[in-house]
Length: 414
Image (cartoon, rainbow, N blue to C red; front, top):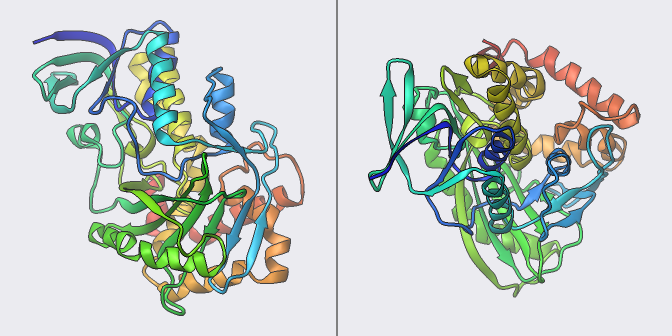
């Protein structure tokens, strides 16, 4: 069996891993890019890439042919009230997202990394190879062994790399679970729905209906479970009832056919995970970079993949500390607030219901919408001065003042 050595071994060829491999290969590193599946392959996802992710693709000159431009968003409260959230351009990102099936997006990014020089492998990384300086690589399920000076774990929320490196405290992780399907509907604007399966007993998360292509829309439920992963079955159990709710709202037809249900775990808010230590760096879901308040993870996966790659290329011996410093600067100011807020709210369904109703009150929601869109989508850094920017900045200051003494915030800041 093959026994090969590389500068960097990237485990996981999703958006974060492929972008890391692409940047490393373009920078002259010898890179192995490993994924357990042959491409194209599907993933449970809403299929939306936020503005920061769109900007990164443009920066790296990666074209995603199957992508459709998506602008503003509709939020529907528990009582059916609707709020229009604008998608405004920033100084460092465009005023739109893109919708693209994960099978297409991930294959495009992996192909770009391979074209840049990354060496692809199909196989599951099962056993870490250890040396005196730490993990030296991984053995694949078929017996091949891949060694590297640095390991990037881009293998999702249940990361084997993170576990092997001892970087996860499973009792503290803020887990979520999402399930999605496709329905025969044409959807113009993305919809997020705060939903109460029972009056004043809100779903601990939200439902969505997002634009797709070829007459299909992406629909699903995401729930936060904190550390109680058994609660993930809630999303699976309630999906049919949520589809009926969307039909009553007139968003899909009562007879819309449903297909291709797929679920997956999310790791949110950077809680319970050390993102880098020694020769191992984690990106995307493996690092817990999913937005706790609205579930976005693709843009964060790609930007963290680039940051990890640049840290390695800049100074390999200091890559872990440089990458952690970047995460603290770029994501901790928001993730600390979002994770602490989620930890406080999710155990109390009535409180979640109250927040959903409050945010969609007619006059309040109209005034808050521009700032809500900036804050909720983690777009404050780079937002031009405007009423929305000022509202988002005020929400950030208020959140920091109110939540910085919580156990969740302290754990993230330690």
